[in-house]
Length: 446
Image (cartoon, rainbow, N blue to C red):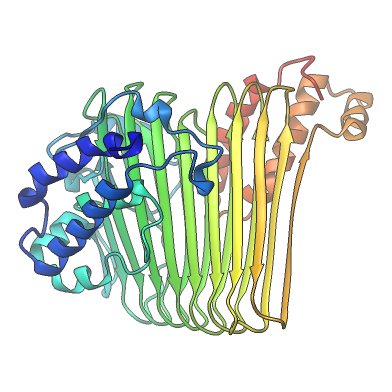
C-alpha cells in the first residue's frame, strides 16, 4: 500500500461504517455512485506532489493527523451567525455547521414559486430520484482523491433548483461554518445548483471558521445551467489559520448559458480550489475571476480548467494575487479547445504582486487548442510595487505605508469591483483592506 493510499484508508473505513446511515441509503443509483467513488478513493488515495496538478501543493500538513467525519446534530450559536452577517445584504440564507444544514438558523421565507432551496440531506430523504440523476453529472471523471472522498460521503449540503423562466431578484447565501464540532473534524458539504431554461439567479457561497480549532473542509459544488440560464456565483473564503479547505466547483453549461464565477480567498487557511467548467453547446459563456491573499505562511492553490466542447463559445478568466511574508500561491489555468469547437473566443490572465522577498508564486497559464478557427490568449505577470506610482503618492503628502496599501488595494480592486451585490463587494473590500493593513509594514521591500 502506498503512502497516499494509507492516508486515505481511515476515510474509506469511516465511510463503510457510516454507509447505511447516509441520506438516501438504499437508493440503488446513489449507493452505486458512492461505492464507485469509495473504490476510486481506495485505489488512488489522496493526491501527492508526484501528481502534476499537485506538484506545488503538499498535503502533508493535512495527513500529519487524522480527521474524523463530523456528524449531524452540532449547532452554531445565533449570536455567531448574526455577528458574521454581511452588512446590508438582503438575501435568502441557508446555514451549515460542519457541512450539516441548520434549518432553525436559515432564512428561506418568501421564496417565489418554482424555486427550491433546501438541505441536500432533506431532499435525498424526501424524494431522491430527480436529485440522484443529477448528482455527479457535472463532476464527470473524478479529478483526485478529495473529490472522490466527498462523493463517497455525499450527504448534506445545499440544493438550489430554479424552474425555467424564474428570475430571482435577491441572492441566495450559503453560509458554511467549519470547526463547530471541535478539534480534528472533517466536513463534507455537497452542493447542487440547477437552473432551468431562461432562469436567473445569484448565489453567494461563504466559508468561515467558528474558532481556531484544527479542521478540514472538503466542499464540492456542482452547477448545471440549462439553455439561456444565467448564474452569478461568488465563493468567499475567510477561514482560520488551522483550517484546511479543499474546494471544488464543477459546472456544465448548455446553449447560450452564462456563468460568472468569482472566488475570493482572504483568510489564513491552507486552501486548494479546483474550478472545472464545460461549455457544452453553442453560445455558452463562462467568466472565471479570482482574488487571493497569502501572508504569513499561508498557502493558496487555484486550479482552473475550462473546456470548450462546442463552437462559438466564449470564456474570460482573470486571477490576481497579493503575496507577502512567506506566503505561497499556485495558479494553474488550463483552457482546452476541442476539435469541433470552432469560433472559440477565450482569454486568460494571472497577475501577482509580491510584497516581500520570501513570498512565492508558481503560475502556469496553459492553452490546448485542437481547432484552427479560434481566438485565444493567455498570460501571467509577477511583479513588485510600482516605484513610480509609490513616489507619486509620497510626493503628494501620502505617507509611504498608506501609499503602499492604497496601491495594493487598487491592484485587487479589478476583481472585487465586478462582484455583486454591492453589499458583498463592500464586505470583501473591507476584509481585503483588513488583511493588507498589517501586511504592508513601513520599509517593506518594493
